[in-house]
Length: 365
Ligand SMILES: [Zn+2]
Image (cartoon, rainbow, N blue to C red; front, side):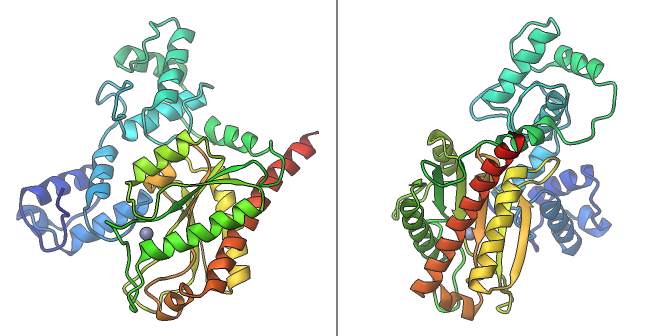
């Protein structure tokens, strides 16, 4: 699709308006009336992107459009079942939430109707004496509603299960499969620094250095793309899932129109509803180690629903060690010492993460 942006006018903008208004966002009447993408439309899109854990750029590109569509579905609007590509939307998320609360296991509340959600639906149906076909239509929804007389609150079982899973483990990187994702690629260079450094190239160097560091520490790291290759985020996530990775690290660089923007930040899965407890813990450790070793400003950790975080089945973190758009920080990306510092800090954070699991298991006896 073509990106819809400020200054545009017409049917595509009218469609964006209709979706934003249905979601309760405010748009000034003149813009609604002549289907134009002005300041208040851009403001609403930014607020929507913020709320949904997307990149906040005020543009309606493919990801924001998909998210607008997904956000528009309420449970009961359509029949849900397993198909390829998977059905996605807030209705699926609401279904997963309900199944979780009732003690079935649809996996993470990610709004994607995949194998595990289908299995949880069949388990639920069998449990209440319905035909176990994995199809969520009116009868299955009525059965869910009957069992859920109480309002839906509290941490879902997905969060509890993820916390439990963090309690088992050996505490070292030995034998751990770590998926390492160098962001972007030849077709999509990402952000470009003032001196011409391409995010794709810098991310690849950072990923390669991490790969070496992880091998030294006995881990079994897997690169999710070759240097000359540019799979989309869903394909990268699928590769990590197929590899059965224990954790995933995606390397990117931050960017901003203000060249003074600086520092490192880390992102984990979260957006609407539940976020990944394990991912948040891992992101904290990474941020901790990174800022301690590089001395850069602490841009903190943030929940995001980037596809690489959302579509992966293991705890995942996206690291942006510095701003490629900041001249000083761009310079760092050409220094071996900095690249190595980031690799060592990340590997150490992963070790702490697995050690935390082992300590948790020890305390449990
Ligand atoms: Zn990037």
